[in-house]
Length: 219
Figure: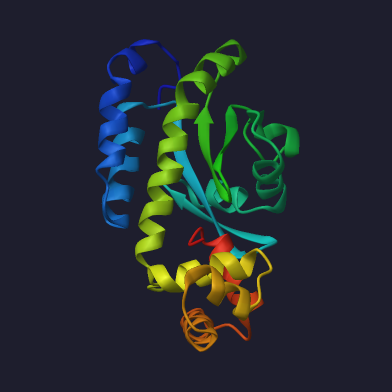
């Protein structure tokens, strides 16, 4: 594979066209195919996209999109990669984590909003290109993160608008009675909606239901 980087790789791809394609993605299959398309047309710089999903409020799970060797995919799931993506948004040569990582692989983390994180794995031979390529790919990665979040929400539990309203006020520390006064419904109705949320999220209580909905960006 030729790893030389040229600006022709990027002038051939109009930024707006890429964003439009990302915004039209509706399923995870569409998303995977789009990442493969980006990988093919921007070779060798674009290596893979990494999405992060919350398992709990304090733990993340990574999901890799793109064709990678088994060795590189295993490296991407290591603790140090996750920690860097959680705590930083600066591009980093993965070789800084140790000799197991190829010198030319760079990690570009992106924080797209509340609990919305992702990263791009880039192949960069020339360190002088790091700033330019990070500038180019960061906004595209942000759109990829948001598209993945949108797709993930399709698999989530179906929380109704009224249930979400009750959860939002419960999240603010309001009691069932206070929520009933705010929403203009009975306290029994509020408890009914919150009980539904607890059941739908497979939670033990309203606090756990709130936590699960927060980390899943439902509320």
